[in-house]
Length: 104
Image 1 (spheres, one colour):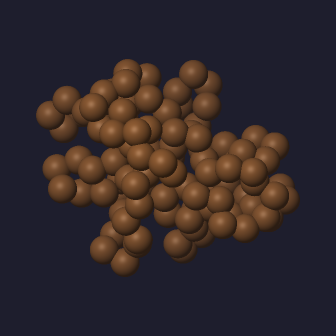
Image 2: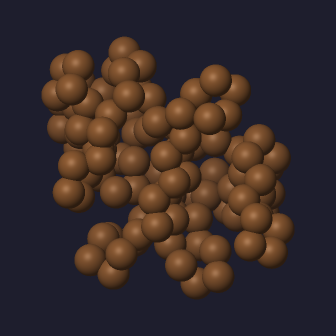
């Protein structure tokens, strides 16, 4: 939880597509997003290879991009920093700023 909101942290497998939204930490790709559907704020569930929102059928891929249904945008990013092997939520670090600088 971060500021009362669920957080999704997904370590991507080699079968999942890389994305400019990926956080790259120690050569591994991660998705770090706020776990609320951008349609009406329901909490999507991970189903095999995507997040599915039971409220209105919205779907998000492994990078948090909206791929089906009513969500108007990808899952929201949250500020983070990485120190050694520790993820710090709420602090804007270099990897978070790199993701924001890429047109997503």
